[in-house]
Length: 358
Ligand code: IPM
Ligand code: MN
Image (cartoon, rainbow, N blue to C red):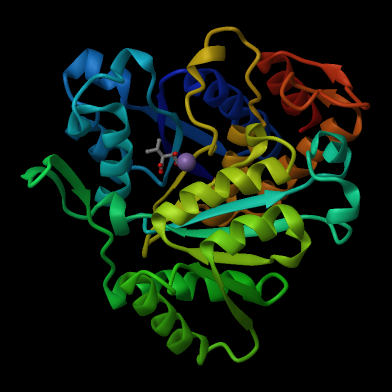
């Protein structure tokens, strides 16, 4: 078996953590006789420095000509003063749109050995934490009309939250399908008490739910959801929500899982092509120090195997190696806190550890 993977390392700690994920692919490839071929391409700040734009056309081509895409992170202080449509983040939004990656799956699971790193007291998470956040990724306020105008009181700015029924339908279906493979419960998060876009969201989700009588559906306002995530995280199974609410709630959910440093994500399209990335971002403050946690990138590689290549067994081999490393007490600095600090490894050290456990 041979697979082509587009590798977009990006900025900050992106290159460091992606290198460790590639180590995992290579180790797995040797064990299972699978050939992974990497097509490296530029995105984000490095792409701006080398080509003048955050998403060069060759990068989109490289992705479309591959079986799947692995991404590190984009952004950093160097590019923070550029105008909005020239920033590294714009490259990420464009690639999501270009590849039609409307469904973003962000699992937030508290691994047993990391319970000590979870800031939520045990009595508030008795049933464990195992959430799959399904975030709409190519619509809403991220892609709505925006601009500046001069108003009665001077300068004004606006960003439009706009959703079509079609966009809501397809992401709702994703959430219900995902829920069927889990505990069959969907919590749809909106702000329907205020926003018209949320009222459409809610009615479309209700309609799609009729096709899934075996899945329980509840609706929750986003402010309440933010509270329930820390009050009773065990109460959630699948969270279905819009682009911006999903952005915010997934960072919150990641802390419930101990550290943002271990959360992977999958961005899926109608077809097989998907993009996989840690949710943590470029973390410029720790870039180049070899202390970043590569587990989110490595677990993203596992999601890539599962969702794009259909290699479920291989995905589990990687996930089990991560669990094993944690059980053996191996930690990176971000998760090596609290009573059970464990044995602290560097970024490359953790990558080597996982590769050896494969
Ligand atoms: C994420 C990130 C991005 C987002 C940024 C970097 C544009 O925060 O993937 O969660 O807001 O979607
Ligand atoms: Mn985010």
